[in-house]
Amino acid sequence: MDTPWLDELEMRAWVAFLDTSNLLHRRIDQQLREDGGLTQPQYELMTRLAEAPGTRLRMTELADLLVTSRSGLTYQVTQLEKAGLVRREACADDDRGVLAVLTDTGADVLRRTAPGHVRVVRDHLVDLLDRRQLADLADALDVARRRLRDAGPHR
Amino acid sequence: MDTPWLDELEMRAWVAFLDTSNLLHRRIDQQLREDGGLTQPQYELMTRLAEAPGTRLRMTELADLLVTSRSGLTYQVTQLEKAGLVRREACADDDRGVLAVLTDTGADVLRRTAPGHVRVVRDHLVDLLDRRQLADLADALDVARRRLRDAGPHR
DNA sequence: GCCATGTGCTTCGAATTCGAAGCACATGGC
DNA sequence: GCCATGTGCTTCGAATTCGAAGCACATGGC
Image (tube, rainbow over all chains, first blue to last red):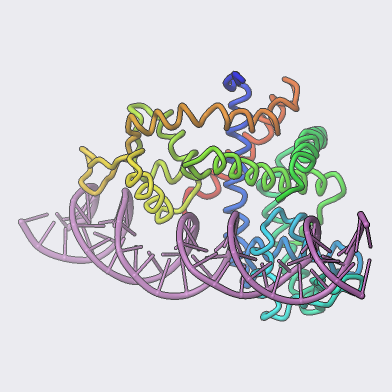
C-alpha cells in the first residue's frame, strides 16, 4: 500500500488544478453577487434545470448533477422557490418524488445573468486556451469525471 | 458588450472542469473524513504551512494561497490551534502581524494523512493521465491561474 | 395482502462560511 | 511629532453547508 508521492510535474498539475478551481469559483461568486440576486450554487442549479427537458428535474437527479448533498439542494430549492424562480411539482410516477421546475421568471433572470457569467468564464479560462488546449482539457477531465462518477454514485 | 455564448467544445471543457472540480473536492472531503481528524480546508492549510520556509506563514499570505477569506482563515487556524496542530506566533517585523506555525504534532498528523490523500488524487486524476496530458493540463491551468491572480489580488 | 427493506425528500442541529465592522498598529505627509 | 489614511487580523451576525435521523411512499418476496 505504498503510494508514491507526486513528482514535480504531477504536483504542478495538481496544484494548478486546485488553485484554478478555487480562484475561478471565487471569481464567479463575486461576479454573480455584484450582478445581483443569484449565488453560484443557485445559478448552476437553474442552469441545469434550463438545460433539462421540460426545464424540470427530479430532486435526486439534480443533486447528482450539481454534486451537492440532498439536504443542501432542499435548502437551495426552497430559497429559489421563495424568490419565485423555481417551483416544486409533484412527480406523476412516484408519490415520493418531487420535481424542481424553472419558472418563466427564473428563465428571465437566467437570461439576464448569463452574459456576465459567460464573460467571466471566457476571460479567466476559455478564451485563454486555443482549440487544441480546450479539447485536451475536456478530454483529460472527462476521464477523471467518469472515474469519479463510477467510483461513487453512492453518497 | 455582446459576449458570444460558449460553443460545444468550450461548453464541454467548461462543464468537465466544473464537474471534475466538484466531484474531486467531494471525494477528497470524504476520504479525509473517513481517515479521521482533518477536513479538506484544514489539510490544505497544513500542507501550505509544511511547504513554507520555517513551516510558518503570515495569516494574509496563507489566506491568499488558500484562496479563502481572512475571517475563514482565522476560524480554521483557531480550530487547528485547539487541536494542537498549528500555533500562532507574533510577527517580529510587524506588531499587527500573526504567523501561523505548524507544530510537530501537526507535522506528524500530516505525515500520517498524506498517503491516503495522495492515493485519492492519483486514483481520480493524476494516474488517469499520461505525461503529455499532465503537462498540458498544468500549462493550461497555469495560464488561467496567472490571469485570475493578476485580475484580482484585491479581495 | 402483509411486511421487511429500500428509496426520495425534508427536518434537524452543529459546523463552517462569508463580508462588514471593529480594533490595533503602521506609514507617510506635513 | 501629529494625524489622516492604510493594513492585518479578529469579531460579529446572518447565511449556507453537511450528515444523520425522520417520515412517507415503493417494491418485492412470500
